[in-house]
Amino acid sequence: MSLEPVFLSCAITGGMSVPGQSAAIPVTPEEIVDSAVEASGAGAAIVHIHVREPETGKPVADLGLFKEVLAGIGERCDAIVQPTSGGGVGMTIEERARVVTECRPEMATFNCGSFNFGIFQVSHRAEMQPWEIEYLESTRDYVFRLSELFREAGTKPEYEVYDVGHLYNLHHLAERGLVDLPFHVQFVLGVLGANAATLEQLLHMRRTAVSLFGEGRFTWSAAGVGYPGQFHLAAAALMLGGHMRVGLEDNLRVTATERARSNAELVDKAVRLAPLLDRSPADPDGARAILGLR
Ligand code: KMH
Ligand code: ZN
Figure 1 (cartoon, rainbow, N blue to C red):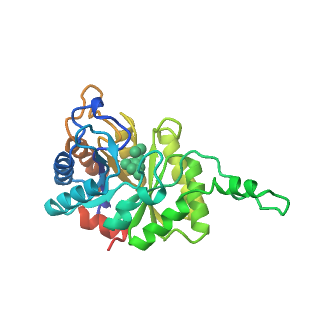
Figure 2 (figure 1 turned 60 degrees about the vertical axis):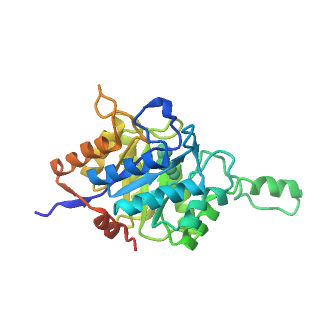
Figure 3 (figure 1 turned 90 degrees about the vertical axis):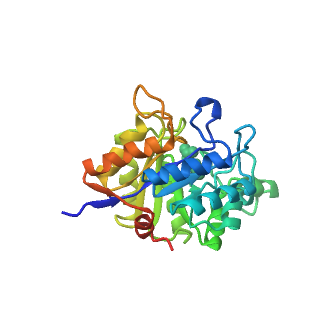
């Protein structure tokens, strides 16, 4: 019996945590490159990248730092290098997508929503004042522009969905012809304010995605935020035919009693789960084939 392949993504440093949380979080471009190369050596087919101000460790979206890190990883391993387009508070969508438009990576993350209220679909009526139209339109989500920028760059989005409502945002985009099929979606569960990293909620997300888009129209991966969510969702993804994401961006523990010393340690633990559940870890080219990357 041949085992179904599974690819693993490692989220190397993140943009929400602060370096004071763990000395293992890589900060400088050299540390981020070293950690990504090590994670790739341990079995990660994708390395998900944010950058940080080298002096302070503060998350930034500096294009020079992204270029340095992307080139440094590309020189030393064959992993799919997947930068974030998450950016930071107060940035325009063009600023957030600059790493996509300037570096044209083969893949990048695409956040399917914040938790904002959208009223832009309300019909514009003749009796409305200009300010009313502007007010309604101001809630039009940035994801429309982001879709165009990804397409122009030839970058495959990894749609990040944090709650079930984001699948409806994605469906709204698909209905407007802005999603290329089959797409890849990451169920990011366990962020405070969004959905929980539990088996029930993963099943609910997956079932909703299948009902909206159809079985076989997308590939998916699960990222559990926190411990033990990270490994519980990895095991569930292995059982359900999905793919896995681990890494210090999402979780700082390797066991209930030990803090992770590196990204590679988290990757190693997840990779060892795969054959126990009859899945075979894919290398970067195997992951490219599953994802339909160039
Ligand atoms: N920070 C994670 C919870 C992104 O970078 O675009 C989700 C994430 C999204 O990795
Ligand atoms: Zn990220």
